Image (tube, rainbow, N blue to C red; front, side, top):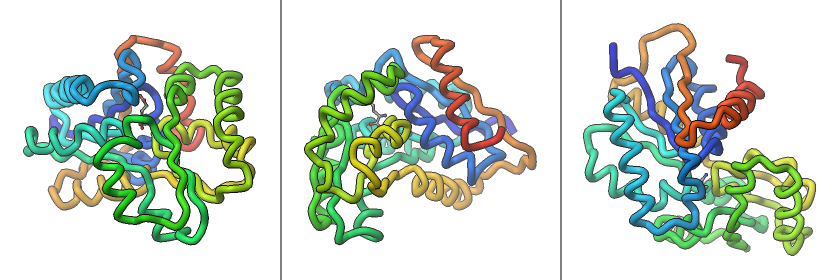
Length: 254
Ligand code: DGL
């Protein structure tokens, strides 16, 4: 079968944190991961720009005969999911969202910090979610520039950013929603500042939902062996490719 691939994208390598969860429960599928690092960050871009960028990536996946698309970027998910689903109704589009419902279900009575890009925090989609679950005490933190320095991979800059911007929450929060797919890559550094907080990440729910959708549409692969993962980076960076696979292999032995 030709169209047996799943296309997944983010504004760089951050979406590897989503792909990891997907591969754990759908190991035999074939994946094309599109790291759009040339357009990083999405978080500060105008809606129109993000819509254009994401539509082009989606068209590329369709040309490559993908059977489903995963938006592994909270910012893109907040801005483009409904528009693209309406326009491309023949292909399932599964999109991540900040795990704020998960906090509601499992840790409602604790104080929560939602970390996400400015684009996500200000989006209508996130605000609906926020108002719907209206958890106990919640701080919303628009982390301008954080995804960029994680993408860049400069450990010192990351630590400095987190020290400067998270210190005000020390001792005040017990839950941290990682509302950008880049942030799970710096969980250790966040804990270094905030101490032993509990993380909430939407990747696992997305992976389960993707499996359910593929089952319902009878699109699950019939292959019994591990699927290939193709990595494409829009800035053609070999360093990113290396970091991507290193990260993927840390938890999953391919
Ligand atoms: N990783 C993306 C997210 O989940 C966005 C990072 C960016 O600003 O490009 O929101």
